[in-house]
Length: 317
Ligand code: PIR
Ligand code: CA
Image (cartoon, rainbow, N blue to C red; front, side):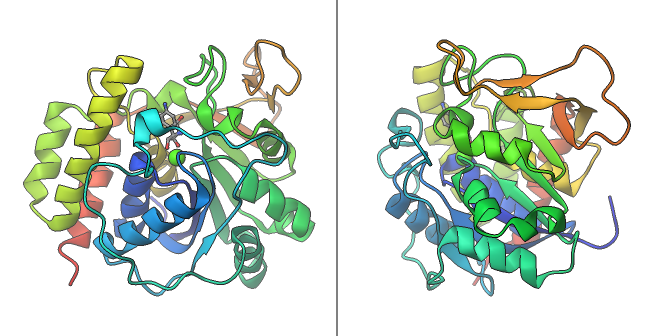
């Protein structure tokens, strides 16, 4: 772990696992959460934005801006995931009324402003939903591209999808945005299903979270209860995978994931493979290649960081 906390902007569509990603980012001493932006995906933009503010209240997150982002993908019609996350996008636990005021800027504008106001190489973008806001920000202000330290996104995978045979939800609902993001000239790391499908909320993990004994930990438990039911019904998982916090954990501790540099692109014209993330793993990538894909995970270490973050958050007033 590096000494100075890495400053991250979380761009999300909460979303059960997005909510846990937010808690991990807030509670971990290795990262400094500087802003949160929302994007349509798991539910519509009004719902995911409300959910983000509700989660902030649960975790005691304050003093950072939250901004509503894109209400639909760049090209395609909006596609939601109520079978997984419920109609609200965060069904299950009761959510408190927001305590924070929404920032008046569009999410893409907040991304631009955050990156331009910081030193070059300071801000890491962590998108855990469709890449619409990140793509918009790169087009709105191209000078952010060389200033961003890295984009670490949850999405895609090299070994198949969850929304089609080849493609993962966050990429498939806005493939054009994903294409922009992986092809911009900034370091980009794909945290895909290859690793997140191994970050499972097993009964042992549940017991550790329950053992924390705080209101935010109980909230996470209730999120996992709901996620467990829908994941079993819709995807046949006995224990639900928790995707989005894995991208945050990748920034917190490089030992969590095994990364490999590889040329990476997003399929935009396949008739069967739209939204597929194609990584060329045939040979080692050239020295200094800017794209990396996650191929392995230390799941125990990942959960250590989640539990540690919950312990540090404690019981906010
Ligand atoms: C999870 C998601 C969408 C659909 C399914 N089946 C499961 C959401 C999660 O929030 C995560 O960011 C990503 N999209 C996983 O595909
Ligand atoms: Ca998500």
